[in-house]
Image (cartoon, rainbow, N blue to C red; front, side, top):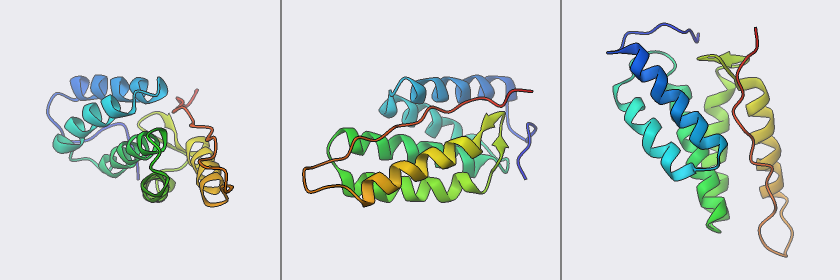
Length: 131
């Protein structure tokens, strides 16, 4: 379902922007990741568009978590997880299987949080598939 080729303008430039957004996510620059990938998502027409949307939702979910909005974080992480699951084991060269598993663990932490406030989430990084 997920491939490296799609019909979009300037595929090389779009790929650089996707990699930039993933690097921002991995540096926990969630707001900037959202901005970068939303621009890509708007012009992307391939099947991977939904995966990009899932990464955007992850970024916003973790952004909410860091700002103390656990309800919003949980809602977005669940939506993102559902999208990312569809693209296992990989999409656009990224390891979606490991990412989906790590996000599920954070969802479980949020749903079983203690009365003492927000749980510490692992906040995964998005890795590349090694060939």
